[in-house]
Image (cartoon, rainbow, N blue to C red; front, side, top):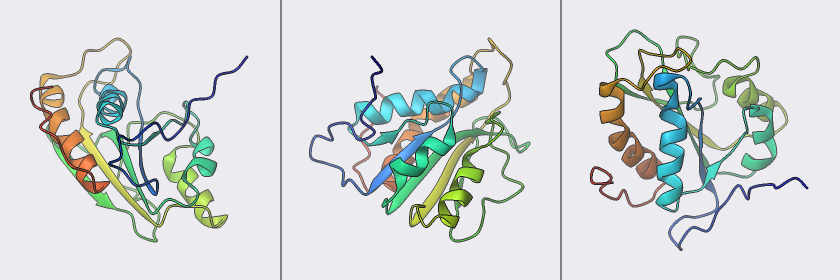
Length: 170
């Protein structure tokens, strides 16, 4: 028996079904754990989080009809660890200089472009990321990144049009 997780968990009456976040990363690779940590906190706040199970093409069905999609990942741009960056994608591809930490052969940018070609992409896509420094297997999340997670969660909730609870107290 294969259990399929509902991509839209109960929302406690706060979130429209036309917005969602997708959080990328690996909990085993230091700062790349930003996505899974943020996903857990968003779900606890009642926000819809799509799960691509490490295969971004699975998102095509899940995000079809969404008005807003927020992509969350660790970044590698050379900025200081913990620096939050935001990109509004618009109708153009994700910026080439945006170096998401994903290691998949087909990443979120490819899935988004495929979705656009098929007429199944979200209307609005924003990318929110935290600059990371440690991405090795078994690395711990760096303190600057761990400290910035609460602000990232609040920023994602704001992008989704949801109340941003005070996450600093967990």
